[in-house]
Length: 495
Image 1 (cartoon, helix red, strand yellow):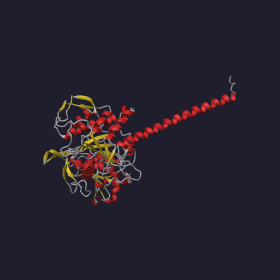
Image 2: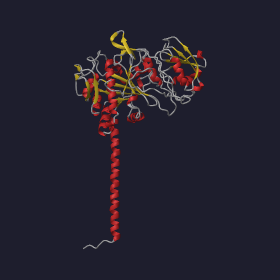
Image 3: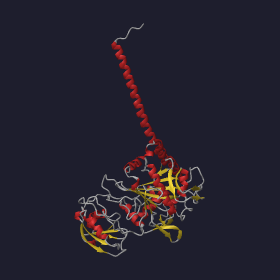
Image 4: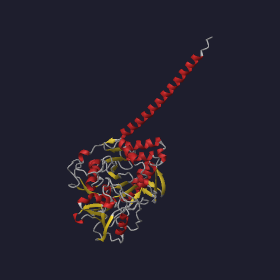
């Protein structure tokens, strides 16, 4: 019979067991931590490895300047997203095996503009059948839009890939493209499936032989393959134009945005990973648009909300040489100016669009309103427009230098004339008029001359305004007959 252990021995053994349990618990905690971190790194490496990188910088040649911002301040971002119609890897030949010329086209072309303050996102659709100037040889840095040729838009991708599309966009619009992304058919299908399908709404029965797709009137949740057929239907709906297809695609993207930002996805890590895995597998981007940059961009727009995302199509008209093609209207210039200047669209008419209350210029304003004298000229022919604008400026501290009536049609939108020495003061005035165009004119003296034409936006509050009195209610608008029609991503998909 073994002797009874002494109290000291029992206490020592108990302490040893406690230490062992603590060590085991510590080892388990470390193991869990290592496993968790390892899983994070595995996920990062997996998603990052999915993305194809393509450096097109050497062929771009001369590029537009970016908006000047103070050091450390956020800047607006422009991302060109192209949908490649490559059929590889989609598991079906229903949409054809290849394009006639060989290689892929980019039938979907989107410029995604994120405002510097990350309060607005604008998605611009460029019609595939647009006839525009384009570089003759996209691989030659010296071949530009200016010395190029007329080409149908979706052939740019076929002839020179993403670099050719970027050169054409920048050359035509003066907009600097910070990043690009190409998504192919396969990725589109897989992303929709990863979301558990996407809801669509059609007001008519669809029976399209080309896409081998049928759908009855009403709301439906579509799988990836079905959704691909839905967004590609063209000839059997409406007038069969690409413009109607773009409207349907914008409604579909609105539905995707609503689905992808819902808590249902965020609360399902498996589904979220599947969505990100599908997205990155089909993605080709510039070398700087990696997961770290994407994560940073995503974080910066985390509070944006779908109601602050707008879709708009480049305004077009029939192309004289071929009535099956389109050309951009002159009113497209106002769209490009709004993106370049990082201001809201002039006179847009989107459903459920929030009212703009202020704008945040890319560069901080340096001249206060009470140090600026403004003269307002009404070139719109809309009675009372200038006086209404003057009231909105006065409550912010601007000094009113009088009113005048100009020639109707002499300007479109808002044109602000100023002496070169008054450029900083003119920027403060321009912050009050979304989409305004600044022009140097030494004849105006020390007064900032504001000309309000058809399509001019009503004034908003400037960041450095004087006083807190609210702006008066503005009931007069200078509606442009070619007002940009926008779609808000938060509106009902059946609208």
